Image 1: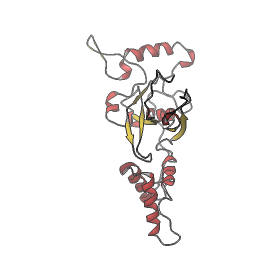
Image 2 (image 1 turned 180 degrees about the horizontal axis):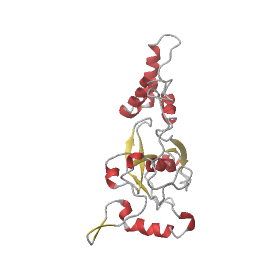
Image 3 (image 1 turned 90 degrees about the vertical axis):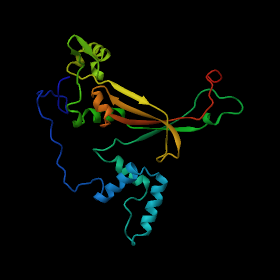
Image 4 (image 1 turned 180 degrees about the vertical axis):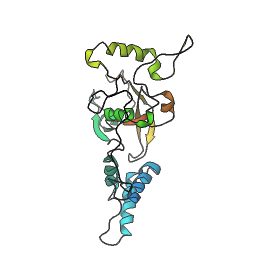
Amino acid sequence: GRPCDANGDPVAPDAAPPPPPPRQANDYSPYHSRAQFELADFLFKKEQMSAGHINELMQLWAATLPPGQDPPFANAKDMYDGIDSIPLGDIPWQEFRVTYMGHRPDDNVPPWMLREYSVWFRCPRRVLHTQVGNPDFAHDIDFAPKQVFRGDEREYKDFMSGDWAWNEADVLAKEPENVDATFCPIILGSDKTTVSVATGQNEYYPLYLSNGLVHNSARRAQRNAVSLVAFLAVPKSMFSPRRYH
């Protein structure tokens, strides 16, 4: 891939990235103060307090204030909306709901076939843009496949050093519109867990996304090269593919 600016126009290989926009030292927007920002960080990230407990805390906080003064947040939704509106922070969460649409037995329909399940997700494309644009990976990222040798022996270490990435890049390079483009593989992973924050102890499969460009050392170091992009609901069922299909 060839370095380019935000508009896709090529730039010199040694060109420095544009500086971030200036920001005042006391600018905690969208929060009104440092205290409000740190409270949101404490409740959501450190304490991982449930929405119900946040609502109760804000009600108790309001009861201690004189008339005309409000607590830092009206409720949990007010706090979540503030977090989602941070332009340089996490990408907002979205939700869609699904139900089982297949065959149902005439009698004793299993409850999971009747329920509605929420799927929470963040835009994978925006998450990927954030990862690739992270300046922390400036020296730990490959924008093209590579072959590494120690003497006559081939070494396989990072994702882009593998044969698959090399072969796929050769295939994509045959298309004229891909000239100077960067091939960015997407890596997804999931496991089963129980999520309690604002979900009421429901079981979900968290879905994680990473990109194949960053070095393995950066991915293992948990430097935001692996991002949570979705929570997939787990229906509680005794589903038998041989009976219902």
